[in-house]
Length: 130
Image (cartoon, helix red, strand yellow):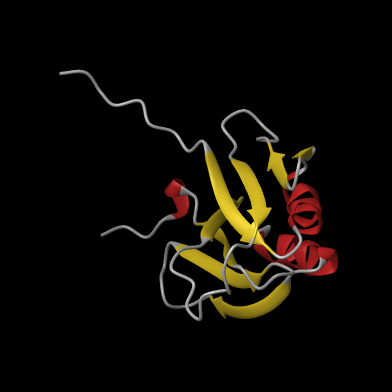
């Protein structure tokens, strides 16, 4: 039996303003938006990164967000990255800093209210031993 070769092609979002939301995420990731009609494709900014696709909203926004992005940054850089993202237009929601020994994260919302997290994982050599 061979191993599966599944990777993330793109994270798709419906948006009130696909162009504006793609511009925010382009600033977050460093990618260059590629508009096409009413939609915008945001390719991966780095090898192994993820793409995003923004299309016009077709129905009212659900009251509960069923999924969200978890973004990872190097240990010790979460707070400065959160400050950068808030400066780009994200909204701070909450921190999870002491609940787990191996990870800390901050939950933010993009300009249209989509939640996403910025996490930093303790480097393996610094992880507590069992």
